[in-house]
Amino acid sequence: MLASGFSVLTIGLLWLADERVTHVTVPPDGKAAESRLINVVKSERTTPEYRADAMRNLAIVGSKQAVPALAEWLYDERTSHMARYALEPIPDPAVDDALREALGKAKGKVRIGLMSSIGVRRDAKAVPLLAKFLSDADAEAAGAAARALGSIGTAEAAKALQGALDSVAPENSTMLLNLCEGILRAAERLAAAGDQKSARALYDRLLKVPKLPRHVRTAAMQGLVSLTGEKQ
Image (cartoon, rainbow, N blue to C red):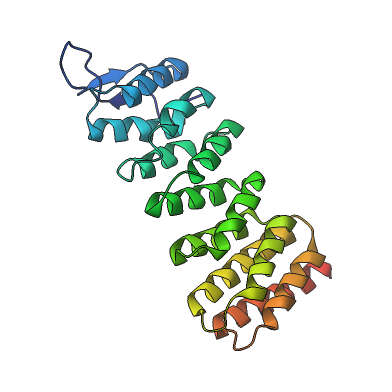
């Protein structure tokens, strides 16, 4: 089904010999539109601008069928963002498989973006892979992993975050803040899932951190208060 008010997809598509993909109107039927958009993404004749437009539209009409074509563009820093944008809303586990596979191979900013998407999708299967990055020499990657684990917010993710918090050097203030943010996120997820005991344990753990930044301490205390209110 197309989104409400989304009756016509206009993308770059002109299949003429030796021509680059430029412009045509795609029929409003969901499956037909998706098939045409996938062809645009895959074609070597598509300009970068129209490939990005096709990916943007696949975020609306895309299904499992679009995943392989989009996944091919996850590794290029120039296209990874739009490929992830298209993949994130697709309700199929094939997306999570593709993101995890890419994360295991990607580097730099692409890798950080992949962690963000995995966190958005709350892929519990990615927890072991993300946990390995908590001790990565790349501070940005380690921080992104902490935030993604917090967004996933399972008991396993929380355990990984607590383990990293126990071993982080006190002078590593940036990573400390990233871990605190991840733990706060995880506590919220666990509380929302009804696991108040685990959420409370996370807030209590944060409050035991020496020289905890004021805003983190405030957030943890507010979290504890909210749990008390829910209990009442």
